[in-house]
Image (cartoon, rainbow, N blue to C red; front, top):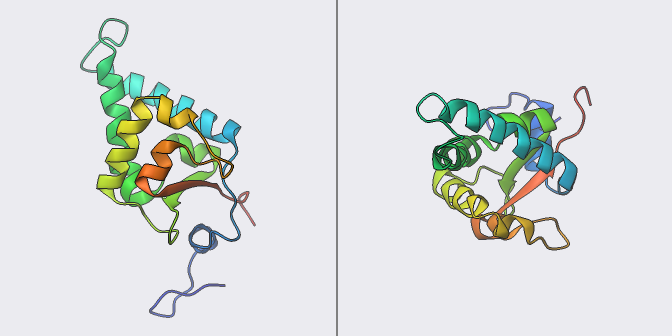
Length: 141
């Protein structure tokens, strides 16, 4: 089991998230499911101050903020947590930070950068932010 700098054990999920050699890129189905869950949540949140059927941009702004505030420091949105995927730095497996999360969210909102993927399943929005979305092992392992 991995340990922290102070000698205490690191939870298994945190230790696995840092070791990119053991985690592969998340499959498209999991990523799409996470995006659908997050989009539904963004529609609900934005409906408190605008009708999404009339004004569409508030839900997009909420999605961009989700990326900056949740993925940047924590690596997951609620949809990603349910789909068991995490967005981490492709370089070191750590958090990508708020600014890179914001960049990733802005490019995701444009849609096209997200659908142009390479063999490593990283879209242009992930490449620009220096991130990779990895699948987490099932709970209990």
